Length: 262
Ligand code: 6PG
Image (cartoon, rainbow, N blue to C red):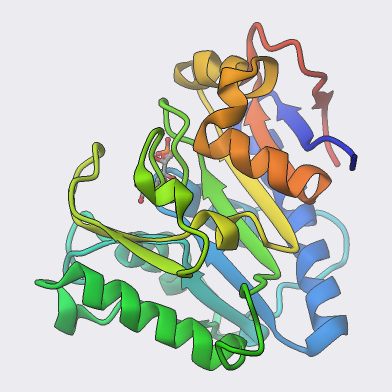
């Protein structure tokens, strides 16, 4: 048995950002030492805003963000044009990419191919091919290993576009899956599969606000919660997972949280 996930709790967004930055830069520097590139998968929801704040506003120590070494992928994405209000790419662009000062360099970004908006399975297959081309040939790597996955947690315990009870949770082979009836709109999406989403060298979840406290309690304190998508990632990835939350999100949670800066 490995160690349990890390749960870091902060007063609010302003206190969370510098520690989230430290966590990300640590993952970046580790990856750059290993292979001189930093491969990150990001989700939508509230995450891109927190990411922008951590990387562009917060300061903590001397480490530098080396955006020119970053390769950004989407842990899940909605099948909409890239400038659509529902697009996770658009969100990441507005909250982060457009605001990066020139001297910090430019990440390489891998958006979905909007040619396939009408065929979401084909879109998933194409995105998987993109991962194959970057992470090595499909037959030599069983599961692509992101240096860092940055994920959110829905009020039902979903993460990426992996929803509780979905048959997609049983996928063991494909890297990227399609979904046409997402309970959270919009319905058509692609998502990393559970084996890929739980395989990151490091996995960071961000969950803030009192609206998350019931699901956080389930995930961290109950057996049923461990079967939810976020709980499954906790179980599979154990201490490779770090949660960044605010106090309202863990009100009533018994699992021990470390409070204050990293
Ligand atoms: C999406 C997301 C989704 C999100 C959670 C949490 O594109 O819908 O990737 O998995 O991360 O729903 O969203 P919040 O952080 O906004 O609560």
